[in-house]
Length: 121
Image 1: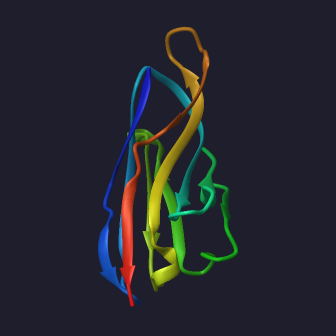
Image 2: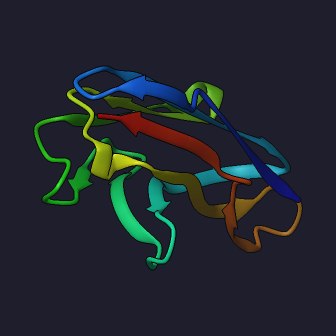
């Protein structure tokens, strides 16, 4: 099985920065895309940013220019650098990854447990 572990969340003042990490472990043959999603109280989970194994990125309009997604393919780890944070960025941030397991080359699509990001005004 493949697991994701996120870290790096916390409390920060508006205008500050945080860096989230997401490490994938387990029986991994290949990871295609990794991404970050977030869910604020009372709202649906929404895409923040995604990155393919080749480095192509996609961002939500609300974070473009402030957030940067990156990944280390050798370490099966993705990062989300968040700058110029706003109170509306407050949410639980979830990591997602999809790819193929090493044992049977079965497809996987997994989520992390989430990490809280709180931005105070």
